[in-house]
Length: 376
Image (cartoon, rainbow, N blue to C red; front, top):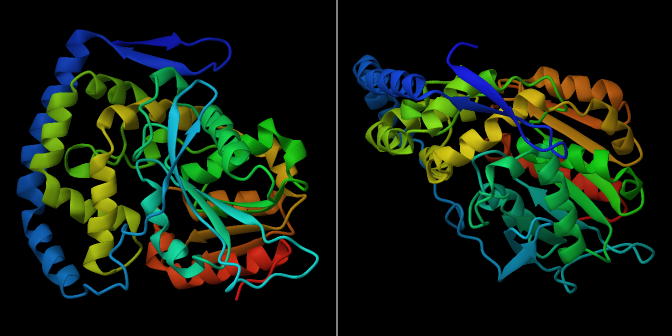
């Protein structure tokens, strides 16, 4: 790999890090700047068309997207990083549970470059009916900024364990993960298989993977125009050395970013506020954070850990037009979990939890019922 060297971290993490030579940094910074101008000229007409079409499809929601809040909670991870969390408590006057079973707590784990607000429609639907825990993954949202060497899927699994210990210590739990959040659940299953079937009584894996997901094919939110979706970890390492240029490019190409966000996050036309909502979460994630996590996707391989999930009711759900974590990854998980409920939502994209929230919510309610408590 000319111009780059691999740096290995401690044996505990075993994560490859890429360090770019100064000349390579300048080269890719120049290319990124040039790409902004070229792409701006090439897709300006499409931006205007997209804005007109999507703008006509705006719709009012009962609560503005991302506005649902609860009292802030703090969870301290095993490396002393503070994770931001919120808990929606069970309304005992509205909830219905079987006399012999305590309703499980639902713990929601969001994906890369998003934050806990992405679960807006699930939170709105289930609020008061079950106890729910939401938290921002390290370096995301309101959580503390992590050291780069701790930005691994394995560390996210340990973070999830800390959240369960702090906010759901005495409750059976149903884990709900989207994209990198689903990978986090699999990492926990790898680290704590004895919890599955006892403490963890159900799991929902939405638009995710258990391995073989190349970082260069993920699509990279936050790059200028969000068009550079085939970058290697080495190129990302180079761009991370020039954060000012990248962040400036993100602001300059904001309209282009909206178009590409719609193309990569959604499978078809959606209300304009959905696109803006996702785009704002992506734009709020510093490029350095994106770069910190990026190499880990290439190294992630946890298929053996799926054995722990075979002990519990599991939901696998993915959009048929998911360009980020393609449907083939969910199908491969389903092959190893034949008792799981597997749902393909034809035509939906990666942000299926927004795009087809009604069907996602219904599937989650069925999962909670399978885990031992009806939701009404």
